[in-house]
Image 1 (cartoon, helix red, strand yellow):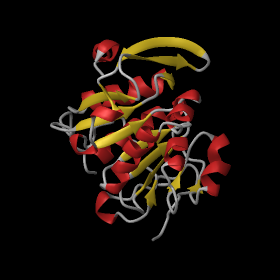
Image 2 (cartoon, one colour):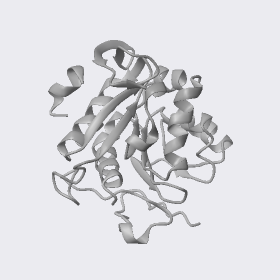
Image 3 (cartoon, rainbow, N blue to C red):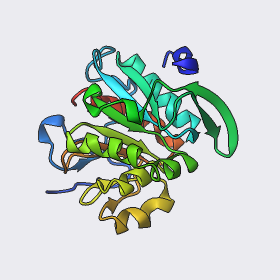
Image 4 (cartoon, one colour):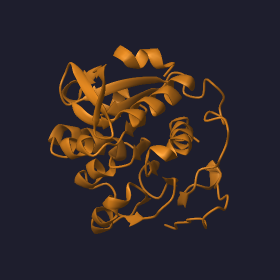
Length: 229
């Protein structure tokens, strides 16, 4: 995929700050803070996502580049196949905060793919990216389909705006860029300030993080979720 190929790329429990509070996979049914580990693919080794295809849904412009490239790299390192899905063919333009960054080739458009072809979904952030996606009905339907089919979703930063539009955050516990907390609460979610939150209280596993500084924990939790952990 364009330049990305060069990367090598119910009860809720929210632990106190600074405490380790990982709930093992066999105790699903709530919200947990992902475990810290030096190896993002620690549970299943380098091939934990072997045979799995993960969709990365982004708008034609505005995605925060590092929030696209780092999870992409983590999926590839875990043996998975990432695919870039957008609302239009061609290339997408990433941003480094407010500055234009690199372009990346689109693998498929939302009109040409089906959720059945994927094992999970990553929603990178950036302010403009999810703001554009939430106004595209086909993108909103595509994101919602992962919840309808019980497949894991990982969203970071401003990405939950798309999930609000899809009406899939009601009753879920998640985090995001702080400015989204009122929107999420108004949509029926419980918002918490944590580097990563893994919510199993719903039809699927939902992984969320706040910002680029959380990417290490986010990538670990996302690959664990996609691997069935």
